Structures are given as structure tokens and as C-alpha cells.
Length: 350
Image (tube, rainbow, N blue to C red; front, side, top):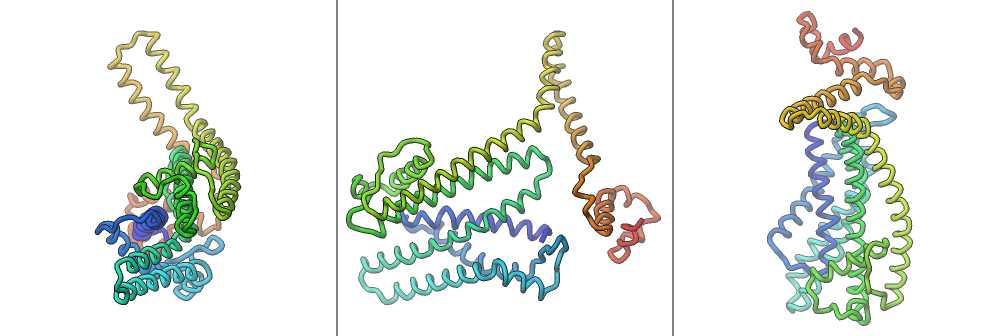
């Protein structure tokens, strides 16, 4: 699960998730067909099929131990993600078959257009893959090396998740008008003939207004729309409070990681200005000290005592220390014959 190929595959999973969560909901605005959208749709359709096959052969961790047994991996996948993955992929192919069958059997252009729009609307079930978003974030979080970069990543991911959530809310708000027909908020605000872009921006403005950001003069016109607005208002209350607390804690952590560096270099700049050091020389000194400061911080991170490591088993302690000093060990000629896979445990013990 931690190999380079799996890392590359996880990047593709993240891209396909973005497609399913961003592009697919936009079909409620009656997007015009294009070769690009069709290509992306088929690529993601096929990708999720291959993802099931790959997931059946990807190891997992159980109680801190890596499990690579084929039977155990398959049983674990059956108990976790397989039901959701197989259900969504099966429904995707059902919709494709229904669309092809509908095109072949419907003669009227108007009926054909309505049928295709309805089937695309059903594909919104793909947004259930939203539950995989957090798992992808955790996987990418493990790749971040520095503490400040980890805080920035968490901050960016929180903002991105909020934008995607509001995007889904805005699309669902417009989808209500498509479901009801008759009197709805789109007709009440004379937006029936507006462009898809204007409709989308209006829905996004309404979604952000529910968070208390900006203003929107859009109001519900039916009981169903009022009920949906109440649900979104409650969601916005929870999201707003958790988002503010989360952002505050992340910003505080980011400021703390930069506090020592800013204090030291502020003192350096004052020293250079007070002693009338030429700008070119002062820039050389600053750049050199920034590099040395980063090296010192890296050295501190390498030698810092991590209490959690005390909980590791003796075998994992050996593997960890071997990986830490691997470059130095390779320089010892008498250990060359022990660096093969079958003899690594001897080196770990040493």
C-alpha cells in the first residue's frame, strides 16, 4: 500500500474523485455535450472498474501489522469498501445500458433529450464517493515531511472540502427546481431563461449565504424547498462553528512553527540596518543564514525523541534504525554481502 505505483494510483483516485464530485453534479444545469466531458466520463467509468481489481490485491494494516495474504486482503476489502465500490460501478453500467437502450428505442427528439437528462441526473449517485475524500487526504498527509507543510496542507484541504460541499449544496438547490416542476424558486426569480453559468453562480451565492457569508435574495417558493433550506441552515451552523475552530487552531499552529524563525530574522534585519550594511551583502548574509537555519531545524527533527516510537516492537525498531542509517551502512564493505533481502534481519539485529 505504500509503494510508488500505489502512490501514483492514489493521485489518479483523487483526480477521479474531483471529477465525480465537481463535474457530475453540474449536469443538473443542462451542460452541453462535448468531447472533453464525454472523454472524462468514460475514463472515470473505466478507472473505477480497474480500481476494484487493484484494491483486491492491495495489502492493508491490521493492528499495526502489514497484511499481504491474498485471501485476507480480499476478505478485508469485502468487509470495507467493496460493497460501495461494486454498487456504484454496477449502477454506472446500468445507466450506460439504459442510455444506449433508450437512444435505440426512442424516436422523438424531445423524449430522447428528457431520457438522457434523467439518466445523467441518476448518475449523481457517484457523489457517494465523498466518503473516500478523507481517506485520500490522510494518505497524502503522510507524504508531507515538515510540520509547517503539514499544517498548510490541512488548511488547504479544509478549504477545498468546504468549497466542494458548497458546490454540492448549490447543485442540489437547483436540482430541487428540476424535480418539482410547476412553481419553484427558479421560476419565482425569473431565472428560467438565464444561462447555466448565471444559474450556477446564483446557487453558489445562495449556498455561501447560508454560511453567513454574503447576501442572497433567493427564497424558497415551496414546502420542499423550505424543508431543504432548514436542513442546509442546520448544516451551515455546524460547519461554520467547526470550520472556524479548525481554521483557528491550524493558523495558530502555523504561526508557532514560524515564530522562532521570524523573531531571529527580525533581529538580524535590525542589526543589518543599524550597522548600515550594504543591501547586496545583507542579502547574501540573510540567504546563507536562512539555509543554515533550515539545516539546523532538519537536524533537530532527525535527533528529536519521539515518545510514540517507544511503543514499537523490537523488530520494527530494528527496521526503523536500519532505514535511518542505511546510507552509512552501505559504505561499509564488510556489510555488502548482508544487504540482500534474506540477510536483512541480521543487519537489523546488529
